[in-house]
Image (cartoon, rainbow, N blue to C red; front, side, top):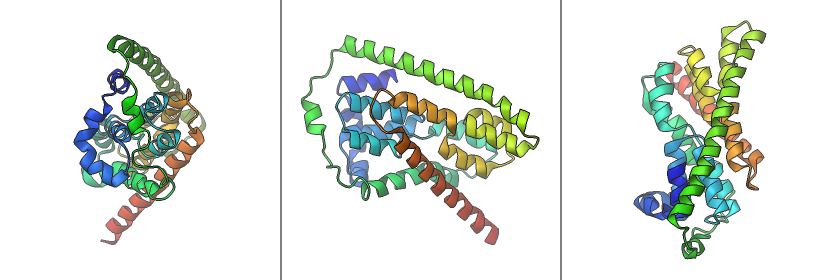
Length: 258
């Protein structure tokens, strides 16, 4: 969060984006700041995609419409967490289908949205104007980034603690291990996965796309200082969860038939 905040305030995001511009710009038809958001959103995981979108918007580097577009598909479980924790806990050895479900579906969803609901956004919107804005000096930029990050990390940690504590509730109301495990995943995905283990891997993969209610609250705290629509974000996240469900059910059907 600190490093990303510094890059945004010092107008350095385009330096990173230039490396991936030849690949991502034709696909998403967006400017360099948006490309940076896509990279961070997919590489760093919840809730950095939302954090960067909100920061870019507040710094007038992207428009509200661009920020809402980025929120629709750029706020996902991080690949390091997914590969080193989630998949081993679920006992999944075939990683490629899981990676397609976790990251391929949001990428395709973003491409589809760009050519339908968000097709009116010009490719270079706000970028030329943003380049003309003087970047902040190093020390003020560092101070703002550190304070913003400390505030954000404190809130994230608080939500994780609260929802992990709430994982006790399913065991009080449900007798079936299935209901307890799945409800725990819906509340806080990390604690839920540890409890479910290898029992229901496909359902857990679908819930990883959703992210859990804790991740929803974490996302909300990242954008609450803006006028970006949280309900619209939730709508897109539900759409992605439905698409992910169809994808995994299709894989299960193909596997059964074969």
